[in-house]
Amino acid sequence: MPSSLPRPLAELPVRRLTRSDLVACADLCEDRGWARDERRWGLLLAAGTGYGMDDPGGEGLMASCVVTSYGPDLTAVGMLLVANRYARQGIARHLMDRVLAEHGSTPLSLYATTAGQPLYEQLGFAIVGSAQRVTGRYLPGGEQPCDATVLPATAEDLRAMIELDSKVFGTDRTHLLARLPAFADHIRVARVRGEIVGYAALWPSGRAHVVGPLIAPDTDTAEALVAALAAATDLPLRADIDARHGDLLDRLERRGLLPSSATTVMTLGAPDLPGDWTRRYAPLTVATG
Ligand SMILES: CC(C)(COP(=O)(O)OP(=O)(O)OC[C@H]1O[C@@H](n2cnc3c(N)ncnc32)[C@H](O)[C@@H]1OP(=O)(O)O)[C@@H](O)C(=O)NCCC(=O)NCCS
Image (tube, rainbow, N blue to C red; front, side, top):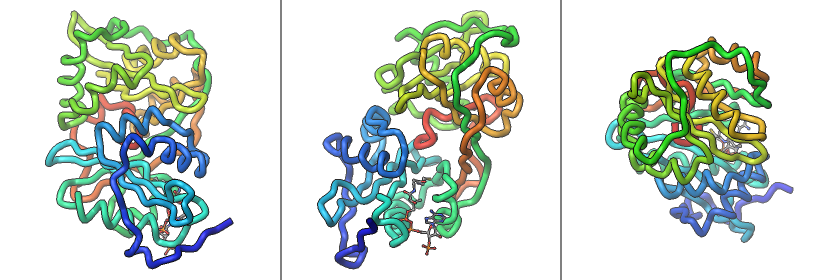
């Protein structure tokens, strides 16, 4: 049943989300058919800034958005959600206007769904790439041999992972990755002659396990990291693979991970994402880049 706004939008407050909003955030996801993802919300609200609008009808949250700052060069925008009952009343635009007013002097990036893309285009975001979501049960066997040794990450590996990540991602994201050991169920590192050249994490979302981030020097190592994580779970896998990595997408499809939805990578205030896309196969989550 659609709900109309009792007052003009400009009079409805936008407030900061906190951990006490986790259930309301999860309810909003569910309202839009997304996994509830309380754990992901916990990470996002701890490492970033959440914006929310309360339902004037008293039913939890009407809208959300999360911003993760990576210093002066990049801020990622994610989790823009408006409850179905309030759709097409300008609420997402209102929330994005607020985010742009607060963060618009920094280059912004996001992964847009088909529903979100027209709004971002109207706000001046440009398309710089896309990510292909793949899902399914991983069928092991037939992977290409790779030069790296893939092992579970240890606490001592975190510093080297963060150093590698800052080169590949293009900015330091220690504040996010320091939380990765608590957020992820499994982390694997790829080493060549002792040096960490890649890493990947597996975290739960609904009835699946998501692979992300996935950072590797080449497709063979990326495939080996996915295979190692797949061996650690009985759940179906999900990953949002940079569409330029068609070679990995082909291999994952042969292993049973089939293409589902796609998202469009967009930026505002920067011609492209920083860093080295050739080694960046999948984001931590599409909400953080
Ligand atoms: C995308 C979403 C946030 C839009 O929220 P909203 O409050 O309904 O959007 P607005 O009313 O502010 O619409 C702004 C403009 O975006 C476009 N738009 C909004 N919803 C759209 C949809 N479902 N399909 C295509 N374009 C859409 C329209 O151009 C719209 O302007 P108009 O109504 O004047 O034509 C909402 O549909 C949603 O929560 N979807 C599910 C989650 C999602 O995909 N989020 C985006 C993540 S990147």
